[in-house]
Length: 125
Image 1 (spheres, rainbow, N blue to C red):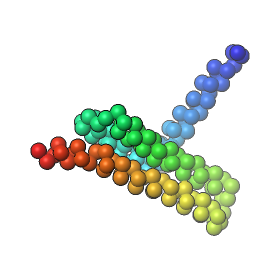
Image 2: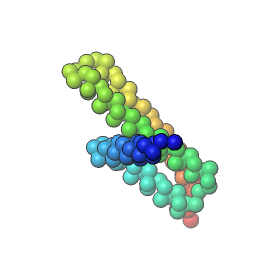
Image 3: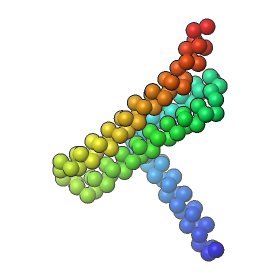
Image 4: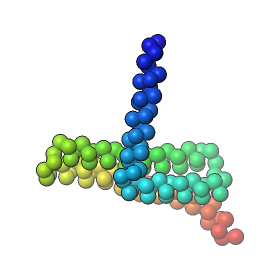
């Protein structure tokens, strides 16, 4: 194995973390989604949900954040490729944003299904 591979791997992680940092530094919606996800995790910990429910919750939160990152990527690539207003650029940006909206709505549904009943039970007592 070449001695440059670990350095290359570290650079890959560096660039990945730089991308994540860019997402949260520049995208208000990503910060909001992260805070909501952390609140959901705090409520889930308080409710002592099952491991299977944690898995679904983590995947749901990650899915929303991943799509937000992909939306940011699409917007940047479209702006680079088509700095002028173009109907197809609008389609690309609108569809990417729509996918984040679908994931966000689905995540609220997942939260209600997983956290709703035990939360209702705790608060109703």
